[in-house]
Length: 401
Image (cartoon, rainbow, N blue to C red; front, side):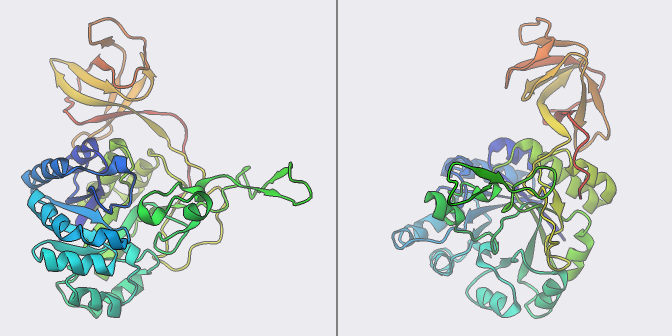
């Protein structure tokens, strides 16, 4: 069975991933987790997450995928056992020493080899397998045919996982030194400042106070920024090639992003949404222009406007409850009386909440909802459920797929 794997950087994102159809989730813990500290879960929160995930019959993985320093190795045996005690189903690692140390300390903890390890061939995959790996998260530079050949030359019980959606990096399998070189903040240690996504300009040495914009088209100068990955139309190809886990990137993203992307991929996998419908859904979240990555060969040379983020919709709020024709909503972004709020739901399709009657927690009428996390009440005839999300259209969106 093909697994849909979702990113989790908060408890809200975890609830969204499970509700909208993820088969498994991955999150960071206290150590070597390659994202900002705000996205890392404490041991107590990992335990809570594991209980919730397992209650839904799903799986939970923890990222331990930074390259370890000498003084971090000693902590790994205890860390591996603590993760297992918390209910973690697998740890995602990229460092050879981390994998062998954790495997010796806790053989019952399943180990997955991160895309950061750049596994591109069956000989490498077999080596990881012999060292105790259960799954390979494939290098992002592989084509579908590369994956197919690798699959033919590995044991049946060695699983393959591939990224299908989310941010990509202008570096080999995400291993980049640009942030380290410019700011002393290492992306390989979870502290990337994302300088590849900044705008740049030229400066001529005899004119130090004059900068000249670098423009390809549309007044864009994001010369180092990648496009975002979108493989909603390639799922059958990847599954046929031997991929058993389809991974969405985005542990720093909101619950709205997680809900929409998981919902789109879940529905396409289940055959309840067409690829064309799903593509329109994926335009509603913040994204750079989309690409299918290397799966069909080399990336196109056209990187114009690659760093420009667009989205057709804005996250308006979360439905907390709906009783007696009144939806209780936690507001996230501005909307106002009379707006059409689209419902994002794993059950309802194309539902719209007309915000014609809004009151605050005290029952006072609200014309403009502009206080983040304010509790609002909106009259509706829709059978909304707790966990449904509301959004509002903001523009025509980016037609680039």
